Image 1 (tube, rainbow, N blue to C red):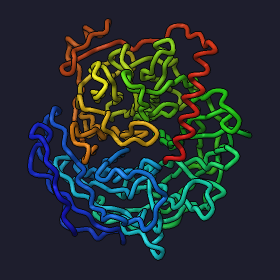
Image 2 (tube, rainbow, N blue to C red):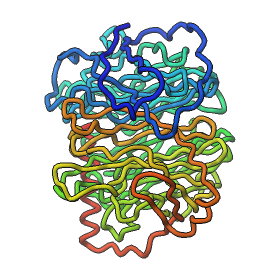
Image 3 (cartoon, rainbow, N blue to C red):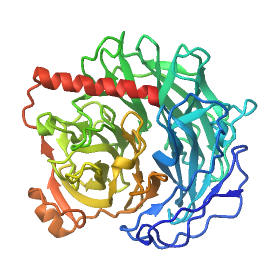
Length: 548
């Protein structure tokens, strides 16, 4: 085990003991060692923990080069899961050393056994920089799109896309890879290849979900793009706890010239699978609109229903108001979560609440297993501010949480872009309480990968009655150490006064309680100018595929 150097951190950003950071190559399922320590008292909700560290990679570790700008020590696009057998055991994953031209040098794995107070780092061999070789299934230049899940028996699974060469270029290869850990994230198996393609296809935006009702089943889903522009949803599963994965297969074809993106599976209490995705119409010939949709399976993924449309997506995408610099955000993507009572919650960026001026955070839910969905409502705290990259989670007690970034504290200074991270939560989907998670930090120094980039998605989970955001932010004023991954805890339990004030929107500048009532969109006239701007937003989403 090789120690990673620690970076300076403001005392206000750290609590407890010093962070333990170590890099360790993949291989084996990991033998169980000493039992995890007892859970300490939860940290203050106002004290985020820095999870990531300086790069552990040596220059040139990927062995070849697609080319582009490398942002060494930049961590982006995190995801996290909590062990259902031990709530003190968290596993988080992220891109380490992001390339402007797509992907990262490798994916790192953060492991905590004390509820997120301290972390160590590991890695699965998804790329050469994390130990991938031809003989272990990880011989790729770069990796991207990390995702992690826990099965009900405590086994962890993480998934990645890995690739060498540019999309559709001669000699290029790309794959969807899965690794398994039987010891809470300490050790990871050699990658299993779910699909591998050459220059004829590329695979993108994969996600992995362990079935909470049956530890034998784990589901992987992604989109597979052809040079012609078609992009159906593909699927693989294991029915024996990860020992064997079934051959990958198509589960939804959106039709000629159309694409899916951002496929994610959640599992209802009765075992029904719901695959949530964005459908991009006319992606091959010029876009004609996007929508969120879902397909269902009542036989563990063997067969799937026709799609149910959740809502049209009317995302403009975010940008720096002073300079016009694009922010690579979650425009035209979305996030879904399932509650223990079967409630489904979905969130996404949408400009309908501002008449097409800028994006807010839209929320919709289903109480009948995804067959019907409520009309979208706005849940971000400040209607006048651009809000982007939402994530949603439903706690075991049914309370819904939504995290997102916004620019409410931005100034007129074109040299900086002050940005904050927020948590909005609700017990009924109507009255929402907002809690400040972090910021303001300067998003202007984020890696630029077809826009200022901290990730196409962020993560949100919970431990008991506490929401746990897992997110990336910039290190303001430090261009050589642009971003890190952080974890925070927020109880988000409204006071009586907050609930009483929920009938009208209130807010503070950065801290304290803020309450609002979910807001429906006024009539939205899609003028030719607005339709053109929406189409341009979708085209940016498609172009960003090339910078996975």
